Image (tube, rainbow over all chains, first blue to last red; front, side):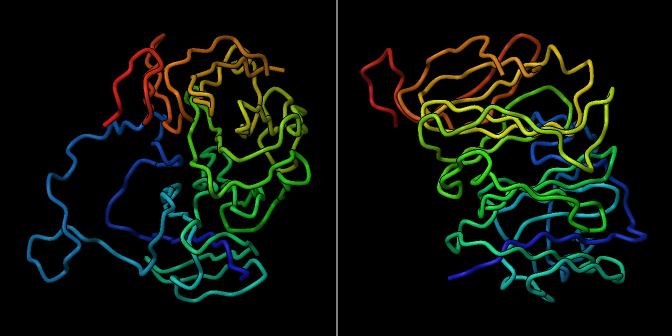
Length: 252
Length: 41
């Protein structure tokens, strides 16, 4: 059965609170640590309670970790669990505060519960672009308004077989924007080539690239929105399917 | 990319994401330790 990958954006126009961007599912520094202080020590979504701290809510739920960037929330979800969906195109529309603003649907064939397993979306706060790795094997780049800037097939270009059955780990590569996902590959099928991608941030004349590596049958995707001089000595550190943790030099 | 170092510490796939603090890497696994005979709980 054909299903759909959905990228949503919720515009928080005039929201009552301001919060730091959370452009990666592991937090601003990709460490799983929030440096914010004075966080609430209670949490209640029940609007009937006098002491609840709910500001808004939407009927959107799923496995995807939401991102917060420039007042918008981005997440991946199954369309049948979201209101107001369209099929087969990219649509954007203005909505009132706290309502759905952008919905993008893309054909996919995951199992019903696997949507979002391909990898949570991640954002580049400097450009506002949002990237997603769908369970259908597409690496996608959207601008902040939900317009698709480009897509690449990891199956056709990098030998991906499947991804939704594998867990998504996030490798460590410092505090710069990047992401990594795991998928199954045949031996030797991964091409380590990296090609510049249009619409990505330029740093020192370098466009964004996709780099892949393979460890004992488990492929990892590394996406670099830009490649400046500060990245030349950076390491990619990630667990592998062979039971080891590996460190790679990122620079070409 | 060129591999700089590796450290074998599990007998199955490592699904955990690492955390790096300075020159220390923190990462876990959900299988057996290769150097022990005990079963993971």
